[in-house]
Image (cartoon, rainbow, N blue to C red; front, side, top):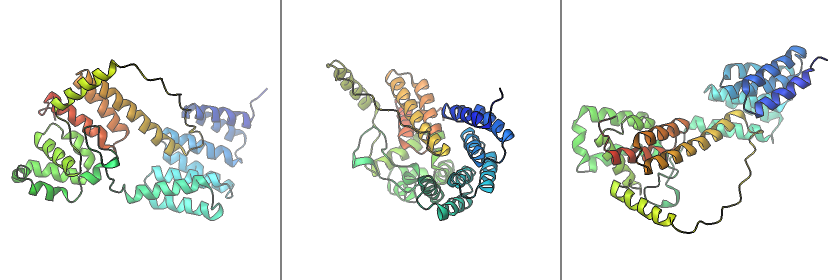
Length: 311
């Protein structure tokens, strides 16, 4: 007995939820080959393509979906998400707004439009969480906020840092930081840049701990480890991401993976496995380049291991 289009769609849905986009695409394609008039198959394949990182084919399927059924809300969500992934922000906004004209309360369209507008406008400067200081990271502050226009003023007013301004190489790096704050990760081996980094942290109510302070923290943690362990908390239910837009789902999953990589780096750092810790922090930064916490942790490894020459 031959497989029906709906059966292929069901197999595609199962594959997509299992994070097997290639298998999902194959099944949705089989469904389309049997019944090319069903808009849902194109919508689902669009989601699978976007999950795979193929925004161009995701856009083509979204357009096919809308062409077959212009009264299907997800068609506009798929189109908006694909255009967002292609960085065609204005077109993405237009797609979401076109959908909202017909479906003004659709949550997928509303959240998608909000996400693309935020990315188009760029991340707003954020402050440190709770105003607390210490070496535990940079809270919610983004790198753009740390290396903003006021950075040159802070350098010029610092008695030690202002001398570096006569060095063209130093100034070139500072200008690169202002243009691309994420490039900090390539400069952590330069002691002057590290001093600037520390000064900017201090000016914003934060500080990077010295190796001696790190040792003191480790001693404290070792002492705490001898205490009776507290009861394990009840496990939290796994968040259901199946109904979230594929692009947003990927961002959430990447952030979770980045935190896991950071924790791995922390454990390696405590074990004095500095090279492996740096690799773990690099993985975290690659997954979530917006978090200054990972950059701060990586910088702490350079300070501790004195690897200033390994830029």
